[in-house]
Length: 356
Image (tube, rainbow, N blue to C red; front, side):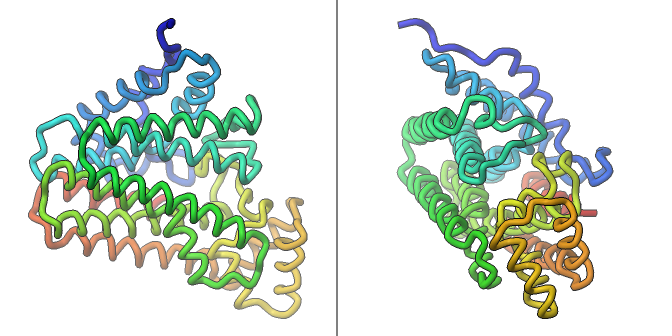
């Protein structure tokens, strides 16, 4: 059998990604202080993660590394694997299992993006055409499956049943969240609690798992596992809420996708829920038509943004993000002071500051 096909020209790009993480709304780096400590603390370990990405995403089937390379090399914050690395080192871990777990976390995230773009029929991801637009839906789904398989192989290599259980459970929960979101699409009667349940499963579950497997591999106390699990969960909620606000107030560069995609796809997010709930009868009729029947024109999007501004929906969404950010901060409070703890706290501010 021939050697697996490697990525082309990816190593240098991967090495630079962590240093180009933070873009504010005007496209300039302004919040590097919020994430740079985490980048610095995990730099050596992330170099090993990047090497493992290159190795594990190779295949004898040429299309697999081509599709995976398209997304993996296109950027992204890589917060989840850095969280895993920092959470392990925080408790004195000196082995290399955390590198495999961090790579598995990143592969799981990449697989969900490939699958998401098919479900959502998205044409832009991280400022580039999605894999489905280039290779088709079938290839995107199957390469996502390949990456999930590789992720589980790395979990098995680590030999921790607890870590395997946490990550496998999160994979199931993420899928449940996707189905919940699909069921709620275009349904204007979706409640705020139902929406939060979707993003808790779809987004926050992997953040939570990324945090928890660090202390697991380090052999930390059960209370430490809970602290990092709760930190990740609430950070993930805050992160998604900010993303949802940016869909109506950011730019394609900020989001890595087209502004207004959630609106065009009929996704029920918190800004929509709040605007609908607070609107007049005429405004609620607009929302029903725009979301349930489909309104992809720019005029409808601009009207939606105007109604959100009128009713404070975007501002209140950001305020809820801050609330979950504070819960994440409180989760780490009982832990002893370490550089990793300080860096993870600063990540909270980074997530919120993306909306200026």
